[in-house]
Image 1 (spheres, rainbow, N blue to C red):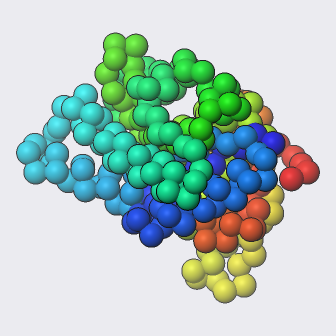
Image 2 (image 1 turned 45 degrees about the horizontal axis):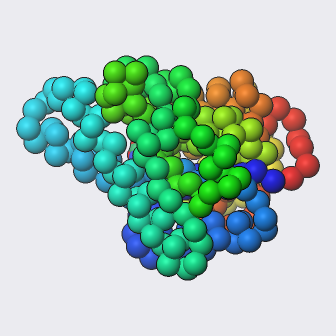
Length: 246
Ligand code: ASP
Ligand code: MG
């Protein structure tokens, strides 16, 4: 199978967690799957970078803000590649510039237009590509970002380009619940939700998935599995057109 695995900021918040995530990736690779990995910045790095810019000006220039915010993901990809190498798994980090994640020039809310690098080849023949989420590069060679939480959209775009069987999005929650599990102790985890219902949830403010990632998944018919990083044996909630064999 071909699988894109995406890990959010809380999953790579410190070195201990990065080492743990490396083990999840190694286990998936050991099952003979072809894999690409997408990561967010560590913990609250993007917030911290935004705050730095705001110490200089209330209205940062958007081109420079994107150049700044994109650096968070550059750190996490390199550390995760090092953690994989340290346990004997071949992996290489790629930022958007290296992989050719080409976007329009809408700084802070850029849309991916195409992926120009040899992604298919890299996934099937190379070391595991560890790809920076959230960032892109415009046709004018400026760094762009896809909007907060945009790494989900990077992951689905990579999965679409690679024609992956699944886009597995790992976070600190293990799926979608029928009500808020923090409030309602009888909340039940859904094993399936369709794209449209998921989109409605995301648009009404549930911060589980970047709305554009769901639209991209629907357009390209990419099944997403929302999975818990700390419950990696559970397949989580499937977001797709219909229930499919996993
Ligand atoms: N690091 C970016 C953010 O915090 C992108 C992401 O995490 O998806 O918004
Ligand atoms: Mg997220």
